Image (cartoon, rainbow, N blue to C red; front, side, top):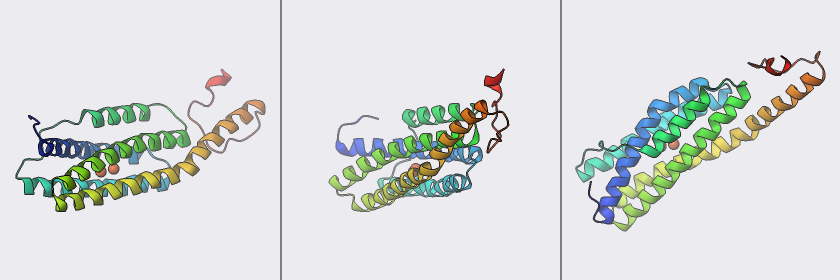
Length: 190
Ligand code: FE
Ligand code: FE
């Protein structure tokens, strides 16, 4: 697509967001499945539902523009998803994996926040107030999700850090019982 104006750029950004959201609809179920903490799992599942709504809002905007929403690949989201799934395939203790999922999810949310913030600003400048409203609603949901992830991280990162302490304790005292069984916990004893 040739970009000759802010309107062209706006539409290009919308295509990018549309593909990014659709990639997330495919990626989020795996992240939920890999999560151990119930609130994290639930939070991701809720955000999957919201994400379907984000796609619908973009479709509504494209319908007004009279364009097919498909046709662009968001390489940035592709990279974020790839990095996220690479870390998920690592053998990790539950709390540590949950912390890794939060880290990946927050990268995604920040990317979306940047994208929707820009698109909303363009929509306002172009006088597309209805679009701006829809983009603002999604932007708020992305921000709330990011906030929720920060709150979950408060507990989960601490638990992951405590897991480290226990590993150290277990090494010092072999009779101590670790709070959770850890895959590969015997590795360093060998
Ligand atoms: Fe979204
Ligand atoms: Fe999101």
